[in-house]
Length: 206
Ligand code: G3P
Image 1 (tube, rainbow, N blue to C red):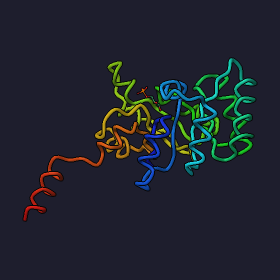
Image 2 (cartoon, helix red, strand yellow; image 1 turned 30 degrees about the vertical axis):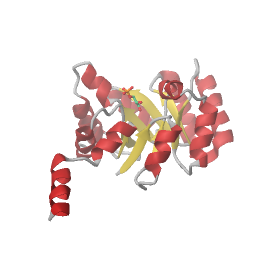
Image 3 (cartoon, rainbow, N blue to C red; image 1 turned 90 degrees about the vertical axis):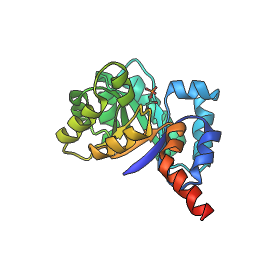
């Protein structure tokens, strides 16, 4: 069981690292754009903070382009880089080539057990089912985690992504996720319970 932060906001990430509970970071182009930084700066700053597992999304129109962009990241960031690839024909071909040379991969935008199976057979280190986006579209994100967990037999880890609330973290782990990646707002809420606050207040009074 591991917890990652799903963010490219280096200042916000830094504030949570002292918890000692964060094992990695997942980013995507949208998160990087929202952070106002450029990918190279964000990745380097995260490495400087001591983060050892950073999902870096690569873009490309072909297997060759995805693979070569991935190798550029591996050259620059070494084993801190987890190469995030789309679940497409070219993305999975690039994934297989990378996994054959022991580069960590994260196949993203997974919305079905079939996609998860293909990504796992392509040697993906992680697969990222997007729970929140399933639920947004009247599909059952948690059922997907359960289905994938029942189907997979290899070493691929289920990285539950697109998580919108703390309850989903508990549910995803219970149904077989190995890792949950959460926005900082969800991480903060995971500490909280109204009865904990009430109990602390009463114990302090007493
Ligand atoms: O890790 C994937 C995540 O960033 C997507 O989240 O909230 O855009 O669906 P969301």
